[in-house]
Figure (cartoon, rainbow, N blue to C red):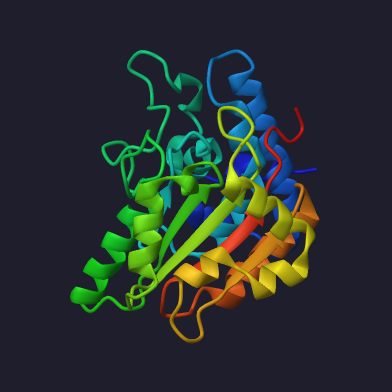
Length: 259
């Protein structure tokens, strides 16, 4: 079978694929990450858990015109490989090599320089508000944040602001129930219950409460890797990408898939 990843230098190449080819690309991308990081240091598990999500985002959105912000950035290895750094990915975190986290100095696809948690929603919201002021109402702004990072004050301040703004902002909650260590606390308990009780997700949604203008809503897309997860994420993001206000989406990932 032809190796799809060999012919992808940037997201424009990715968008030339048929949707049916994306699960195969996900397998190849995950194997590529494992092969490199197995002999180098790096954040392996986090990036493996979002391979399908990464492909779906770059396939459906017009990056780098649409702005994609990864919280912390330790899960962005797939993003780097698909955005022109595949041939130098072996230098990741090495002397004079590419950075271990997204860096605006390194690529136009890295919309925000990260490395610390909980900054993504504020950053993407600021970009979205700036786009509105410039009349760029069609531009998309996406923040991907984990269940550990979203528990911080900075993230909740941004959610509070986004919920009353007219910003064109998509917030993706990457809920894998683990940060550096397994997640703890009341928010973690709430998110665990939401994943197992659909009635709670509809009736008592804490994220929806913060995103409180009429018509706003949150959805949860579940997936454990592979073609079914990619299709679920791609279908949902495709449905909501043209919504012109702040929007929250949740995905359930499994850290370290295929390890």
